[in-house]
Image (cartoon, rainbow, N blue to C red; front, side):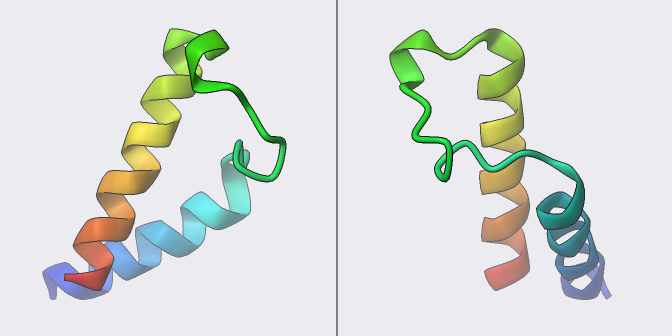
Length: 50
């Protein structure tokens, strides 16, 4: 059940949130909001895979 929720969240993240790796964002110049989005996407991806 938990895994299905995170897989759904991962699909929503991919559709709605920006991909900073495609934009080649420099992490040292990223804003706090951008860092929070990167962290959230990483957390959801890790939970969906695990």
